[in-house]
Image (cartoon, rainbow, N blue to C red; front, side, top):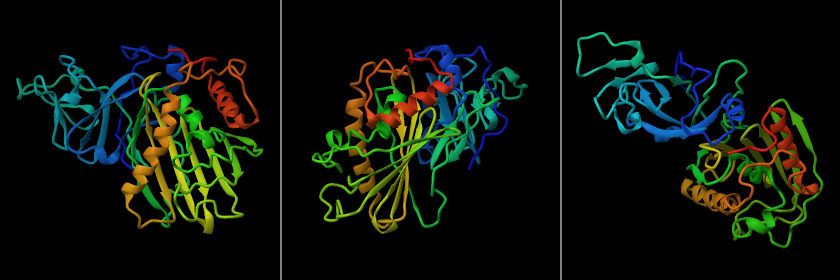
Amino acid sequence: MTTATSPRPAAPHSLPRTMTFDVDDWNILARCWYPVALARELGEQPLGVTLLDAPLVVYRADADIVIADDLCPHRGVPLSMGRGDGRSVACAYHGFRFGGQGKCVRVPAHPDSAIPSRLNLRTYPAVERYGLIWTCLRPEGDAVAIPPMPHWNDPDFQQINCPWIDIAGFAGRQVEGFIDVAHFAFVHTDTFADPDNPVVPPYKTRITPDGFEAEYRSSVGNYPIGRSDRGRPGFEWLRHFRVHVPFTATLEIHFPDNGRLVIMNAASPVSARQTRMFAPMCRNFDKALPLQDVYDFNLRVFEEDRALVEAQKPENLPLDPMLEAHVMADRSSIAYRRALRTMGLSQFFTA
């Protein structure tokens, strides 16, 4: 785990220049941790990312990862346009160089002069976990912790970091789709689902300190279509969902012969209309198979979901239960919306 030390939290009045969220909702969501990049993406050169409408730069400073506003304090050029060397990043405009903790360490025009503190960057905490780089824009006070992922540190499990997927939709809609069990027979029939098996058996949700969980049992398998052992007769598939508000959920699937697959759906809200979805996985079977096969299959499944999420109206998630119709199969969705309301978010996410 890599942590940036002594971050300078943004002032309470400091908000992104372009806001797609309601301000009160933004201030609540900014207290939570989100992934912004795959750890393997970050080399010597800086990365430009966006979280909750806030442009950020991610760069390496020796053993540390630095996350800061993507803005040189000298003349406002994005630092993600600059050059890194693994120890610092230099602005593309005047070469001002920034190192650990976002400190300005060099002004080429005045190499022998003292550097004023106003040239230091506003930084945010950086934590590397599950092969992802996480941050929080308002880490002070009652910031929500990074969600746990079952079996990630189990030596019997293989850890897999799938490429992220961009979705032109709201993070809440995407998470709701991930935990929805009634859409399999209609959306995922080219990947794993059975179009002749749409029935959702009864299941219950249980409240947890940071959201809720649900165990869903059915005969719908999770093998890719075409596998000879797909739908093994008599086997009951258990899918254990753990939802951590606002936008992270894990799914643990119980395969035959004590196989386990865990998928984390970590929806990072770029804006109220754009989501970058990260999906680290771990499993204790098929560990010798090519990773590209996993990447390709995972992409096909999430592409099937993406088409529906991007088409939904209203685009954002109505938290008032009377604004959309519900059936018994929607217990997870109802629990998810209730958990978001408990956070203090508005009855209808506005953008």
